[in-house]
Length: 358
Image 1 (cartoon, helix red, strand yellow):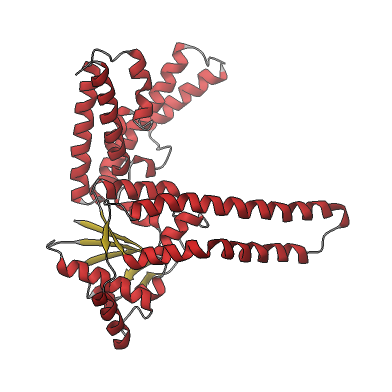
Image 2: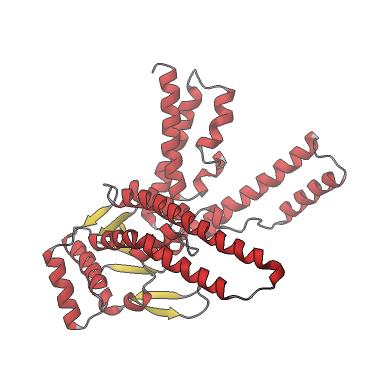
């Protein structure tokens, strides 16, 4: 089984949207994978404690930080002829603070509801965990902070009690200084880490990530491939389409046929590249889930099209039920999207079955 731990600092990035790599759509993918048991998300109580504390302190912290920004702007000397622009910036900062707080609170509602749901595995903060964390600190073993030690002992206790013989843990935290060792230096996007050996000895096989998008690389689809793959066939089809554009033939059947050929060749190449370069790297159990869900989607779509109530309008509306993934490309998108499409098509089939009285 694949397990995931996402630290409070990552979830706070989801709430604040202050840095890339933790966008709301990535959180939705994580929620989908956890909700459908493709990944088991472990949530120690100390994570929720930290997020609750951040939310209590949010209004004061935002006032303080935006106040620092305003003070910096106020100190800036500007040409008198653009003094009104300076005043505009100060007013805009006030508006941005209010918008930031509202957005943060809205996202918190969704994250908090998910963390309290039965879709995740809660690890209670018990007297035993507290004592184990204190002993860890007294021994001088990493990590060397109370909350971080409680996180590690919570996870260690969970796996000690687990009957899973081959667990894999995906550990995601910005706090690499306390939890990990750097394996490879480089730009921020190319830095690689491994969980610290003092921590690794009490955990199962663990992969370390500092951003949510890095963790979710276990669930890639054709969308992560280059947008415009190259081949001689594609080049020829593109040349033909451009010739028709130069001739002003935008509304002709010939142009639409050429456009369709280009799209078909792109999608064919993307599906081939996915099978060759991405699929082999995905965990076996997730590949199996992909196949099972795609088979189910195809079966339900056949049932949909056999419903007496199914008509051209139903077919026209189908793309929105497929998250606008082309039907023949569903097998090559991410598992999170496949699982959402599976739920969506199931609802669409239920609607038509209800219309037909079956």
